[in-house]
Amino acid sequence: MKSKKDPTSSHGQVDWIPRLAGGEESRPCNRKCISRKPRPVGGELHFQLAPVLFLMSVFLVNFLPRIILAPLLVTIERELHLGHQEVGVFFLLISSGYCFTLLLSGFVSSRLSHKKCIVLSTLAVGMALLWISGSSTLRGMRLGLIALGMAAGIYIPSGIATLTGLVNPKHLGKALAIHEMAPSLSFVVAPFLGEIFLRLWSWRGLLGSLGGCALIMGCVFAWVGRGGNFRGQPPSFGNLKSILAKRSFWILLMLFSLAMGASVGVFTMMPLFLVSERGMDRGWANVFVALSRVFGLLAVLVAGHSADRLGLRKTLVIFLLAIGISTVLLGIVPTKAVIPFVFLQPMFAVCFFPAGWVAIGLIGPAAIQNVSVSLIVSIAFVLGGGAVPAGIGFFGEHESFSLGFVLLGGLVLLSAVLIRYLRSSEGTNEPLDSSA
Image 1 (cartoon, rainbow, N blue to C red):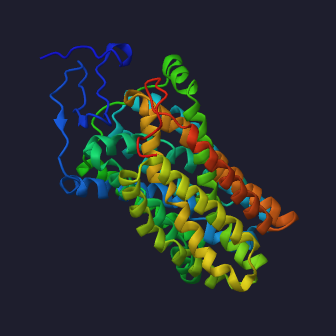
Image 2: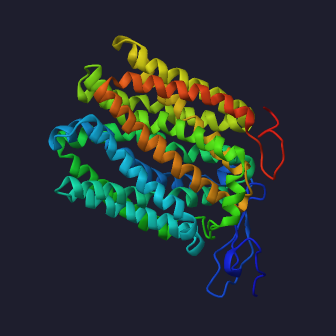
Image 3: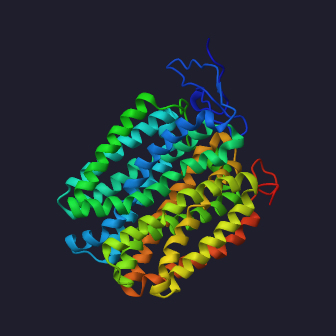
């Protein structure tokens, strides 16, 4: 039976969108746009735990390559005869490519289903890693890093949209916390992988191996992955105007940029900071950086639970203050006392994101959620995951890494004031949650 046209979809096509309040998802339309009955989400999180964990694994393969260079920077600097600022720019290249395709991901997901976008992103990440590992020139490597960012940028809006369609809304905070374990696990695995491959093989061998894993994961998800069998909403003047007119959008953009800088930006430069400024052995530096992220795996689950129980505003304020204080102390404490803050700072940094993702879903209509995610994450990753490492590298070369950490932590502390101005969607003047 032919379906009715959805007024929110483009070109008169049916476009089922996952709804935070409704928790429904449909199967994809065929070429004649025949819709099928939406499948309701399971009542409890454990009913959907397997597909959520599988999606988290795909996110792991997508995220790990973007930060894997961090434990390799000391060796790459020596091998390619580069400075702190030049290797810091590597992450700016990745984030620039990431931003470009993330902004365009809405057009891709409006033509393909979200599941196909996830598969496309994962396969493209694998091919980009193989390209970088085989590059014989610095120019070729830089182009490969841009391609890696572009490949990874397709994933996150489709991944979040797929996840929200898989679980009941009352468990969304916990499901997003599980999904956010992928970055935390990447931060743990990357230094260990880097040190193992540097001792037994090479950094090029590590990138090539990760590329092969990404190709395999993309094929497996295409075969057995669940969810995401619907299309996204493409950016348009109407929905862009609706999003950009919201003050809460700009506040969350700033908060995500700073949180990304405190998490990804600090991590990428931490080994260089410990080796070149605090005099630590490279192997021990990578071990400490890896172990410091283990606690983040548990902390992010606590953060997801806090978002469901305490409310978003209280949760965001608490963790922004913790992130800011720990980042400042990381830069100013003496070398003998720096290790505790190497552990505390990343543990607090990852806790922002489960509540942050939920906040994005509440500041605008669910039908354009993927557009909000694309805009915020793309710009935040360029600033936090690209400009912050480049800036810290600049301070490390001309002044000190510590100064870069202190300035970043101070900005995070100041940003906590902005939480009081967050408002919910639908043009109301209500706070983001009633518990705040």
